[in-house]
Length: 134
Image 1 (cartoon, rainbow, N blue to C red):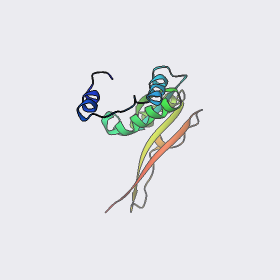
Image 2: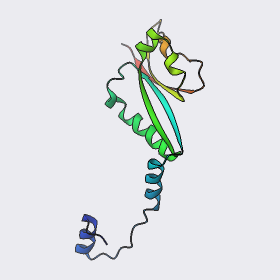
Image 3: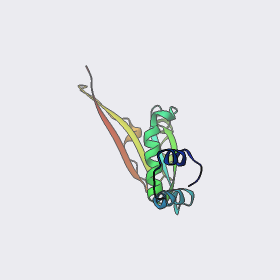
Image 4: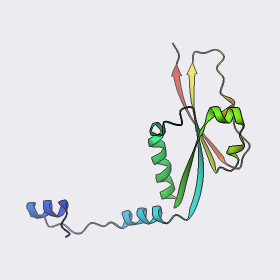
């Protein structure tokens, strides 16, 4: 066994352990280093410059890509820019992810035009959170 912290613990406690089977881990590393496909996902949001706010989603997309042997490119798009400049930037994407906060208790709530479905060749995912307005 190599001289690692694990080897030291095994030796100190006198444990007789088989070498670990890292074949699944090797498969994950291989899939990440050598993807067979590539996709670009547009992430549309209001506070897109705060990339850390989307950390868990970013990691989920990257891991989904590894599972499917695909490299995932994330293009961060400000919803206000799309509303002002149009949806042309969305046409080349493989998928679009939008975050919508639905506020209950507001009589005339409307979704921004920037999150309305766009005619493209891609899939559109919308993550909606309901909030109570008091």
